[in-house]
Amino acid sequence: MKRSEYNQLVTQCSDGLYRYALKLTGSEQHAQDLVQDAYEKIWLKKSEINFEKGKSYLFRTVHNLYIDFYRRTKIIRFEGEDKAKNEVTSNTLTIDLNEILENALNQLNEIQKSAVLLRDFEGYNYTEIGELLNLSESQVKVNIFRARKKLQEIIGKIETVL
Image 1: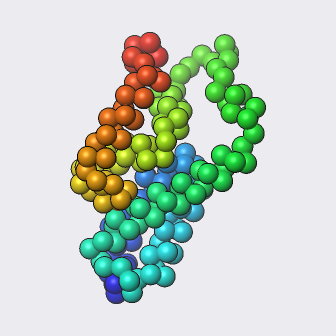
Image 2: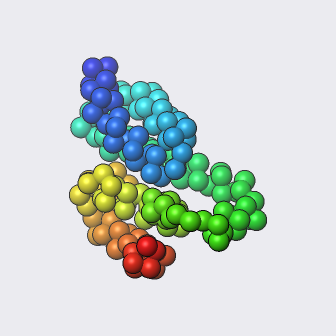
């Protein structure tokens, strides 16, 4: 990949890659770090990467970096901290639907969460998601189905939330 192709790839993918990382991590700072690390990795391997596969490489790299990040923070997090975070107090007067959805998404495994985010939030088709996550198209469909089913169990009917 040439320098001009790298710059074109950065321009084309920046917004979508950042939104994807932000949905995965829930933190602007961590999302920026993941995207920056992905750009660094692709720059270091630019001679080995074909421009046409650059987008897939970037999204897959962000996904893999997120899994590493998730595993590190999961080990560090205290068990009691998780319980306290998930409790809802009676003082809560308003319900933030985004927060409910975010909490539900965080209960999915990494592959399911990534597949649902790429499909429902970023609009990628099954083939593209398969390339990005290194899965077959049927595996993508299964993961999205299971993720949606689990989200439905977690959230329930929207009328009960409202």
